[in-house]
Length: 148
Image (cartoon, rainbow, N blue to C red; front, side, top):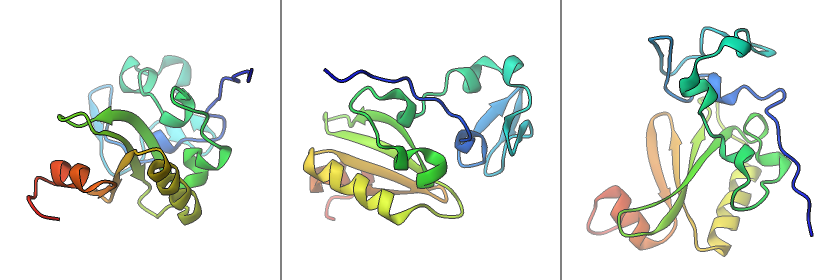
């Protein structure tokens, strides 16, 4: 039996660095870092707001489906693994949001291989553009196009 070790953010501040849309104390941060984040993390961590800061669920931390390897940690991979979801017709997929400055190609290729081997799909968001990787059915349903 494998023991699960609770992962921690540590030096990762990817969820605050501008790739996610944040609403902190009524001020919206979209495409730029949160005003309260510095090189070592959140300057108001003990007093951070409930939403989104306390309620955000980083997929790398969650480990609900399997243990993500260390190289998929957002500050190492360059993308945040969000949540596992299903399309309206029940097709499983994961959302990954890339940093504006790019991502680790090897980590991304690993994720693509993993998803392919496990019949999962990926909605990859980079520069506010969504890309769909996976089955024809998934791409068709997510893009809304009749022929891909």
